[in-house]
Length: 218
Image 1 (cartoon, one colour):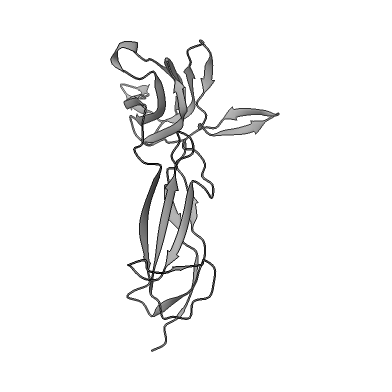
Image 2 (cartoon, rainbow, N blue to C red; image 1 turned 180 degrees about the vertical axis):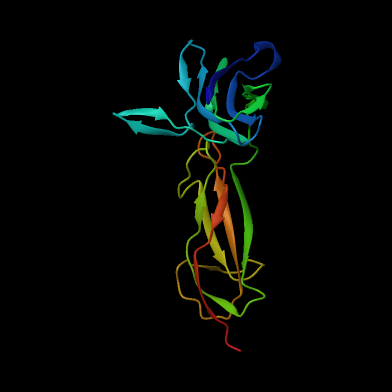
């Protein structure tokens, strides 16, 4: 045997929460970064089993099938609010260690957190400084930021996540992305504005800023 498979079945007690809805699932595997998550399904109030909407899938013969999340670390799944009565988390553990001439497989979760998150504001924003300070380079052109989102979170669009470009920390004047810059700038500021879409909030993992630089004239 080189790997084992399992299903973690969780029943949500009805008498411990004043909210029947769930829109967030947090998983903390143990051991971390070893086992794979194969699928996550929930049982609704009608007794039907459904896959969590933001679990990653791929198309196979015109059918959406779940993708394996290999060597899973801590994960957060954010999805439209649902009445979740039970959960089934399918896992695979390909790693083992030998003890008394036997293969021992360890799998499980340090935490399985089921929540309903409410947000007090429809909009949030933050500013990121991108700098070439300490070099002999300046910004010659700054492209629109590229966003990556974590596995298990809703996709973003131009409404739920947008950016604005500024050349000074006080954000006094907005500039367009992908236009040539003739000032000797070694720092630019990008304001990111996030908006809710229904009851879902965009979650960002990384912002990458494409740019072109030139040698700073002395």
